[in-house]
Length: 77
Image: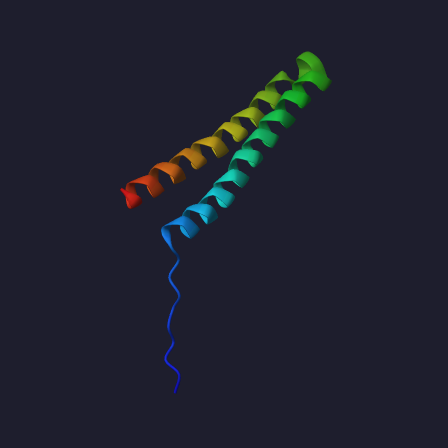
């Protein structure tokens, strides 16, 4: 019977995977905030509230990104 051996990732491989995942969070947050800015620009004064709410949602994505980075840094540290 073959023994199941789990392959462990090196620190560099883990870091590369984390960069790929967190990079997507940065792009997603930037895209959401840009959409909010576009919404404010297209709709003018009437779209300020909805545009700001969308931009706040983008900021929440950035905060989630920050929490993930700090959590990962504490684990490595």
